[in-house]
Image 1 (cartoon, rainbow, N blue to C red):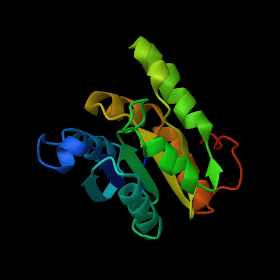
Image 2: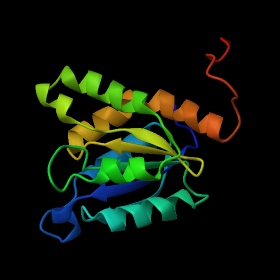
Image 3: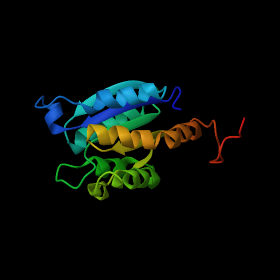
Length: 169
């Protein structure tokens, strides 16, 4: 499904960044990416700091080794949940359907999914997608939007020019 799609992961977590907690999300996301035949080019763990997140999003958006930048964490309404705000300030085109679909599907599992502000967008030709900080929630949300991710990457690579479904073989 994600054959040759290259990912960079940014985990935003104060506790994981300073060593108070081991990050459980990145290994699960990497596994899901590899199972879907994608490639994980880089993973970083940073605190919930707007400046650091901005710096990393801009750096990764310049990498030729990444088509998609996934963030995990900071999508809620807490005072340290800054990921969505930083993402929206940087992207050139917002793709709200990703967040809508993740919330729609997540609501089947928990009523608190309505509190997610996750979004997606295009930054310098890369797809940026905000995932929840929960390890299980991040993987589930990624799995629910894998087909649109693959199609978006094909469009961004200029392999597809429209959103018509592929012809049946």
